[in-house]
Length: 381
Image (cartoon, rainbow, N blue to C red; front, top):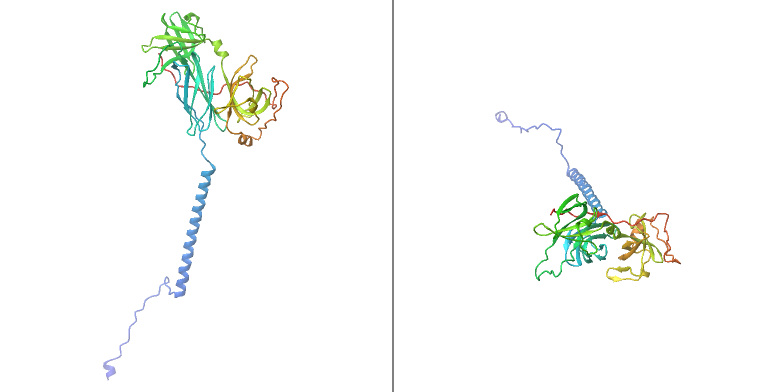
């Protein structure tokens, strides 16, 4: 009866439907799964670091293998173009690449200096009375060259004019160019470098001085002569220097540079450092100054393989006779290895000092001035 009164209670278990996405894993399976995930993650990290390291190496190699080469520049700080000076010597200051040789020369004077570690250079050059053409040419270690050509006027007719102590000398300007035409009371000057014409009024008080330092009349000034007109503060022309066209053509200077590839008596053969098809013959004599930086050298020090720069004049036979030979520091071994077509000759003494030795089948070139970089325009009077 008791059993009927109190029937046994069965324990009810909640039935949970099984999911296809759930599966019971053992401890060993869990550990193996975690290990696999870790290995995959570490593998991805390794690939990433490897690629980053490779990129860094490539970038570093590019930076080292392609260094930036500084371009050859030339800037003059003083004197400025078309300036008038009252002293026979002028100091030339400027800047270029460090360790470069710089040639300074006018029609009748020459000098060589070296730029310092900052690229600055300074040297003195002599002037003749009247119009002077100042040429500044720089020769880089790689054999490049660049030139600036300025006109200067040395007013040597000014006597006893000195700058008081503590005061800066005031720089005056001149209009310099070729004479286009003259009238009884005016002159027209053409500045070909800046494509500009200037007309100046001339009266009886204007001094006209030629290259022989003699006063002349306006009717003796011819077309194409070089004239330098100096004006006063009021704009009136007080003085004019004139250089005859024929005379200026006769005193033009020549400058060349290269590596000595032949020595024969009193003649050296130069091959251009970069343009090896350019070959020049240069003559020297007892009056030729041979120097390296500040040291003077005897002529027997001119040897094959030296890099030199030359400033000289053409003689009546059209030969370049050196007034100054500057030995550029350092041998040209790097240039010879870079240009294998460069084959220096063996020095061959000659029986005659005028014997000419041609180093190769390449024709000897007539020396020509370097490329000119024109100064800025000069304002009208």
